Image (tube, rainbow, N blue to C red; front, side, top):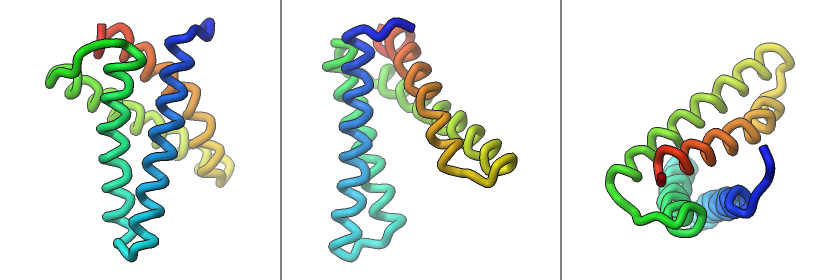
Amino acid sequence: MILNKQFLVYIAGGFFCAALDIGIMQLLMWFGVNYILATSVGFFLSFLVNYTYHAKLTFQSTSAASSFVKFSFVVALNYLITLGFVYVAYTCFGAVLMGKILSLPIIAVNGFLLGKFWIFK
């Protein structure tokens, strides 16, 4: 796949939202919030920012309930793909991080293509 400007904007949004997710989680934990709640709040807030970012900046679309549901489905699908990679890497090599890292290009391309041609078309 040729890297184009839209894909690079998509990747930049992913990095930004990952940093936001981790930052919120760490900040909440610093203030004494339970790690499960902190992780959940960070994920949820970054999920909302991620959706808005991709709707407005990456795909220049309007936000709508239908696209939000589709986006949620793709996030769930990418989560399952990640779990599959992690499971295989852990089972075969005892290396969870390897599976997570190997899944990243797959879920990035999957998320971009489904976003471009299905969610925000």
